[in-house]
Image 1: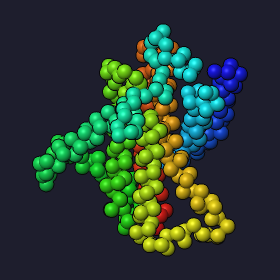
Image 2: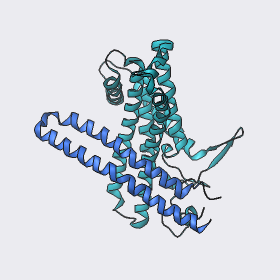
Image 3: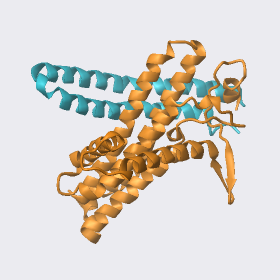
Image 4: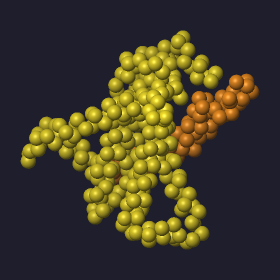
Length: 82
Length: 241
């Protein structure tokens, strides 16, 4: 494999997962904080809040996972190498 | 590939294998055999559980029947929460099957020590860590929500594309492609990420340290099954409402 392509792929893989983690990280923090606030206000709604929180956390996590898929395809199934 | 060769050297305690498959040639198609084996295992497990649960039906359930009714209640609840009281009943089998199959696949990959069985190439793992499986499942969801919508409204179903305004037509059409894409990538990425994290951690520290991550992986994979079936139900709701 061309060493330049492999070096660029490794850097890009690291960047793609790292950058993709920033936004969802902030979003998940806010969502979890709001959920804790909601539980503190209304402890009896805890189960419902937990269910909604988990579902929305998984949605946000999906964004990072897309970055991971890109990183993995760069590392293991790179289309630019023959 | 240089990288995957590096990862597969015998120097490492636990190889990380992505994109290495045990190919079977069936009627001109080459298929990923390791996926099929685990998938058949899961299918037989689910079939066995449901046969065992329904073989001696009693009015007051006991033992295995009790457990299966609990499971069915849970999956029915997923369908009912999304589809609403009046539509949910015909979709319960589909949603339940999706949930149980994905759940079974994820947990079969996480809980059973497949490493003990050696394959000539590739390794046995959760079938959902192969993108072909997840794409097949999500295309199934696409087919079913089209079927549901067409059956409910006939050709009037396509009016949905120009609502609320015809300007949104391209976006509405695009949505039909992004739905299966995001469904399949989410499941595939999550399952693969769990397995990769565990293998990287066992590579660094083989004892004890990976255990909490394994626990997290088991939890996350059950949540993924829940999310896949919830989203399938939500897409069907959008189509039939």
